[in-house]
Image (tube, rainbow, N blue to C red; front, side, top):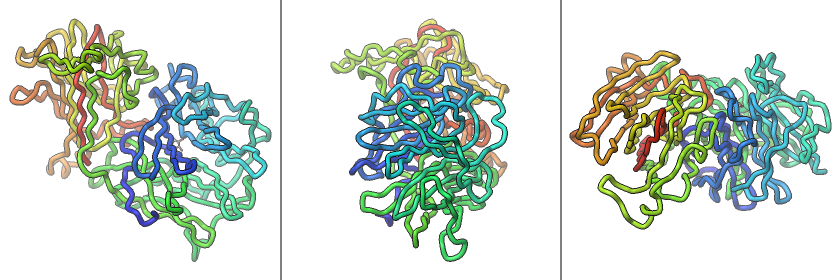
Length: 523
Ligand code: 6LW
């Protein structure tokens, strides 16, 4: 399968730091989720091409210290592995509990409460076992446990650990830390053909990102690089200084393909623009073929190959619980959202306003600026997209938004007899308000729309190079566009959070009822 053309992105939207494991004929993949809950989605595939989300590692309070974690904190860079019938996810709860070991016999969950690795602080934990079953944690020496200045980067380090107790069995020692590029991170250790291979990312998660490899005879090294001449030179994979459509490629995990070939699953971004480019969707999951050449690993460039057709995600809120795509900020969607009318909708009844199923959020006074907004969201998965939802504000206030973080969000909301569109960028805010027109209110609900559209040619030439976010109310001939906002400010490069765009339903005050959520997107 190594000559197969991979779909790329492999998993679209904010799904960074992928780690993958093959167990028999099955593949499992996990990602970082930072301050969002539930945390660390687990995907399943049998062909490495099509992935279905089967659960989350973090689905209960207490597994991560997420309630007040700063933006950027939370679940950083999981590694998923399997041994003797047990699945392991090792991860850093950044600015929270620290390095954690989660286990499950079923990767769909439930996962354990998480065992803290005691006395060691770092990120990007990897897990591997030697022939005697001794567990090695290899990690990146950046201490983000406290949220204070992490100080000097200590390179790639390693220790052995008792996985049951989290107690280290040896002191951390330095292992190979790359070719000298910044931020050696994302180590993964593999045994193959008499060697142990240490795969790392270096160059930083921005445009200089890449993957480098060294090998040694023992899991603890010493590790040496491959030949500069005649062999694949480090970094074996990087888009740095290229104008390839997929940039920032790095943080990869190696996996055997179903036909015995090899592939690397990694994070990357799809920046748009001619000079300065902006990545609205954040860091996504990509894949490329890898191969062994004289005992060294080589990788192909990562090619853009979006899945054809339209991406459609609709939710009429008629199910017994929310779909796993819905996430919350520092709180679980299930804590915030009530589903109403679902049973009637399932029985096939509907009102003139559409499906009976409703999602109800009760505002607590906080806006999208809040540390814990009353919000449930799904990832924006395509650059060009259209999202609509029917909102019945009742006596409350709420709406539809797109969030990068609490300092970067655009939204449109209804309540108190008006419709307001708003753009918030790093504390700067602008609002556009119109009275709620009678033709927009049908059975107490209005349709709010949020589209992401390509910039026109003159905007591109003027350097407006991402997308426009269009905020509207109403449908058909009655649709009114309130604002068309430059999308650059909700991108990885500008917001600088590690996440991506999340399309969200939110309530500020009162009980706000949502129905007929519809997302469509194209690449
Ligand atoms: C992650 C590090 C990185 O820990 O970004 O791109 C950090 N790589 O490896 C957060 O995702």
